[in-house]
Length: 245
Image (cartoon, rainbow, N blue to C red; front, side):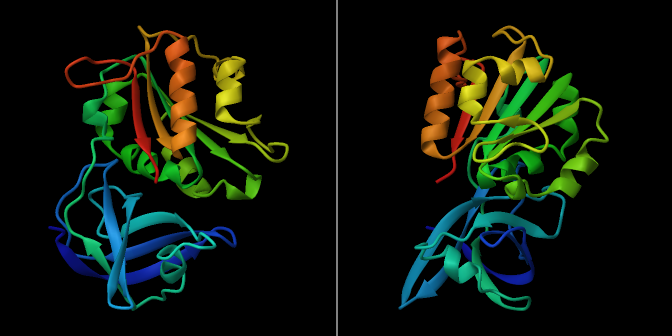
């Protein structure tokens, strides 16, 4: 049974006309960076709930979620209308294993994300253990337009850690910074790793992939062709995934 508690809306930050961050305060159970919970609202006496990853660090009292206002989304359209002081229901217990303690130690870690799926990575990057576990971390964010590259201030702040590199990949227009195209294309032709000045192999690299199911499937298949394997507790590998809907 879901354990729903009331959350008070503190703020909504609009990045574009469809991308926004919802910031709430609620008495939730402790969670690990990279985990997700559920938000819900009642509509016509029916609870509509969706899963969203925490963007904030577990130590923060402000609970933050990065969303897209889907044109026909039952819940996202309602969440987009919320104002400070409004309330929404949140599941108090977080779920998921897309956490840094599930990743084998390695020389370098690639965080591959698309769209709002950058959220859990931002939470993870605020944890000190990631910097102890990897010598170099590359955050890759695939978006359609340059304007979709949200959280630039937070990413700039995280770059105080010299181990962190940030690489935007823009698919529908020329990238102002980073690479053009899709993450899968740039892995396939080798330019992603070349741009990062990285020599990668199953012996020195780990990959965390978070995005829509097709992106996760295609990226995993490309890496599998290159000799990487899925990471499982009983059989550690190099590919750890989270599908973002």
